Image (cartoon, rainbow, N blue to C red; front, side, top):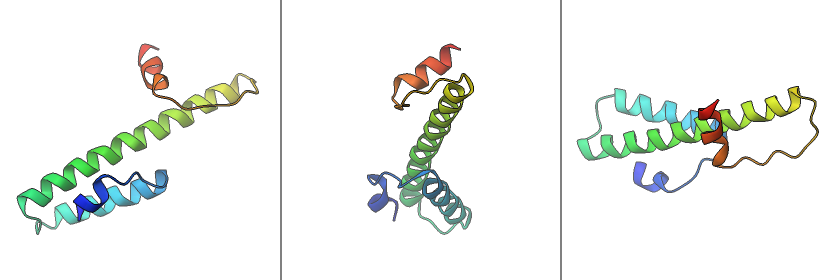
Length: 86
């Protein structure tokens, strides 16, 4: 289950969130063996990081728009470290 999805990036924020919800429900059922639980937890953590980055990118885009700047927004990994310095 989680092994087949582990390398697959989510299509978008909503897909990632839906997958997280499905993983949580599956883990809460108590029916997963330990190996599957660990794989599901790892996948959930990856999806959570993806969602956090998407939200950080959206927040940065809103900041650009609020400043009245009309420029292209290109999300990158440096945006995460820049926001941590603020």
